[in-house]
Length: 76
Image (tube, rainbow, N blue to C red; front, side, top):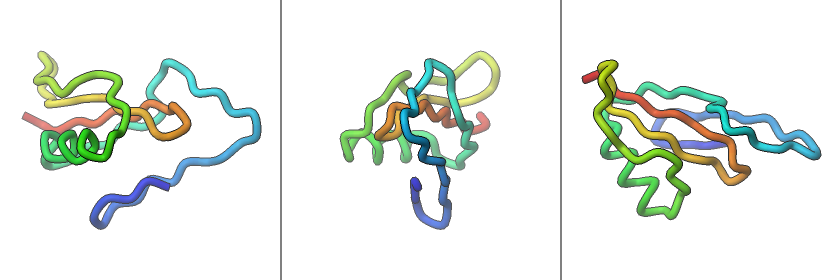
């Protein structure tokens, strides 16, 4: 379970699970830059750096401790 402020993301645990190169969750947040700094400060693996996309989101991708990719976006 990942927890930040009043939000929780529950991920399942399966014996023999192998993470893929695909994002398993997409989180919309109010301040992607603040979450990015928080994750960096806690040595969370960043897969794709924070950027402003051409599709209207400030976004990045990080990996949970098992390597699952989680995409984060903020409306611009």
